[in-house]
Length: 298
Ligand code: SF4
Image (cartoon, rainbow, N blue to C red; front, side, top):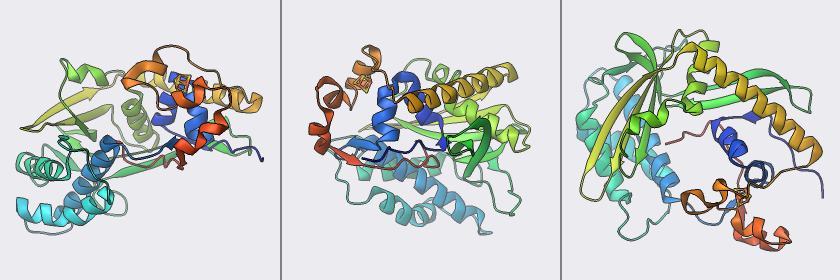
């Protein structure tokens, strides 16, 4: 069997997996295996993100202010495309119907034209209602090319007169101090770092949460200014992560966590492969998937 490839791209999802457990990274991003079936959180989050992008594009590509119904109509095709033929578990709060209701509530509260964050114009002249990047890093991939740090987020805009990254997140509910969850979040530090590399003067991120419940939809805006020393610290750790990744790959050594990563969030999805003597016999419980680092995380 030929040796699986080491991806030349790296992003915040990969970084989290590598930090949690190198073996998890191996299953997920080297062998490209994921459990059979789809996660409702991923399907609903992707459909929500695709719909918001479509609605903003529709609003900013025309001159008249769209009504909520018109915004919903504009985003429905992208929403349905992202949802596909997925069937949500009976009674789940993130049903197709409830996700569309959440979008309606979103447009009522944050109509694109009146939103507190407004998109910047890209050099192409288009509004930055989605933003993706791939930035070369000073570490060489085994191919001899530099690794690329990649990502994609929902908007680069102006908020309170400051250039700001907007990221829309869906959740089941807001835990106490929900905003504190993002103060050390590498995903957002990476977005801000990337914008700085591309010449934008920003240290700011607006994390906009939408809690989707059976009986109500709630929103919460969390503006965060990341101090430069934290961005520098994150970047140093990023390079250390990729250096360790190259070592794991070259030595074909992917340690197991044997600790919290195995049991958190209801149990690691790769547990079936890790507990057995011969993981190959259980691979038919998993399917192939190639990770796209510019997929929106919702
Ligand atoms: S079950 Fe534990 S050791 Fe195995 S991949 Fe998951 S976190 Fe790593």
